[in-house]
Length: 251
Image 1 (cartoon, rainbow, N blue to C red):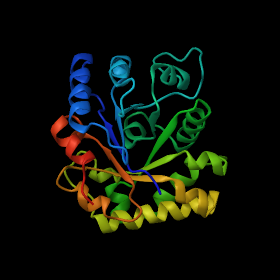
Image 2 (cartoon, helix red, strand yellow):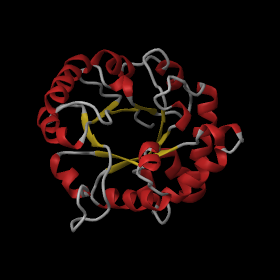
Image 3 (cartoon, rainbow, N blue to C red):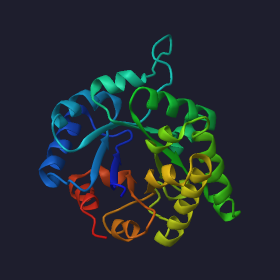
Image 4 (cartoon, rainbow, N blue to C red):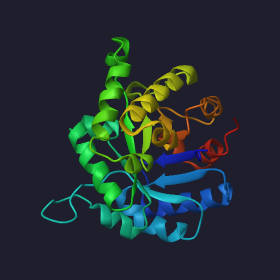
């Protein structure tokens, strides 16, 4: 049985003070949900402060990115062990905004995933198609290529530790979202791709999330689908009211 995972990607939002206030609110609102896993991913500047508040609590900490080297002359980058040291359990890798604005490639995503796993972090690897690719009927081809590239050279046991987030690019921050039925079809395709690489048993253990304008009023319908194991939430994770409702979905 896969434990549902609800992750909030705060992106370029929240000062340290604002981040502390939000996680304190979330802890009071969510309490202890033993059958669901909750993660918040603040900006780098707030990780230490949020980590100190979450210490010993059920909400876990994630980062929004990392670099694959342990140390060196890489100005502006953050190493996997630095994230581990500050209390992170998860790290988002290959988000479409990183691919679009910072020219991240499938090869980079693979290197980052390997580095995260080696450091004991759980990578949340993002995949998804653009609107043009969707309209051209290339969704399956795009996500297949991205998943295969991201998991290249990983062992079955490593694949089991990965989380995949299917985020159709056209739905991120637009207010539009895929239908639960269509999202399920794509997520099922992703699981089949993983099974071909790592075997049915390992693929069956991997949690696959849906992302792309996830909101309190649509989370219930997504979580009713067989292969959708949670959500990677953007804007709706920035307030306690909306994110706590998402975490407390009814399926």
